[in-house]
Picture 1 (tube, one colour):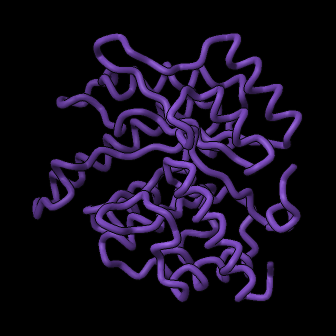
Picture 2 (cartoon, one colour):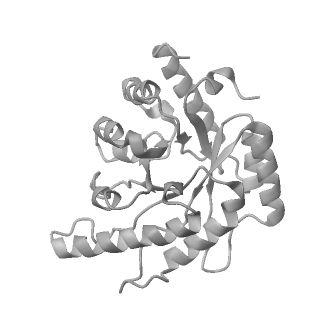
Length: 269
């Protein structure tokens, strides 16, 4: 049974499908009644290994969602881009299509994706950046057609990228945003200015703590930092999904406690 404090939040608080060291379905069964959204982390490796859900698994995932008022977000497996010469049959698009088509029956809240700008992110050449932006816009158009609407896609900011790197692309595409607060913390950025600017267009927010690396428990996050973020989400109020992007039972439990403690400090828990 979902706790009252979580039901009273304006946003859907969730986590990933890899909290237990097991497949997706056992994780969703475990998380049902504990969170309101589950980010399905899917992969399809070149050697044939995959965790794309079968028809039987999809059927049970739909039933669990209906019974527990669950929603799903789906994380696409590869950073999205056209081919090196602008080909529209790049590996990232091929795999994105398979993931989108295999999970559409779940009516995901959002398909979260990265834009691959590793080669271009620090280029001083305006022509290089202009070409990348044109190709990124086209890649999003293609993926939007598969998803059914551009508002089903949520472009996530990445660590070690300029925080506003995706903004010129987003100005030209009607897709939504996934604002990863943890990535901004990891890069030493104050997320507040980006949160306030992006919130009207954000469909998903990712939260995770930083220790030796990211995607750790929010217990490692200074209370004032977490309080400030949650206060903005409450004041808005934000009606999307907030994903605690961690990958173990202990990190999930301590992150949930950190959120609940913050809500108490804010007078909302």
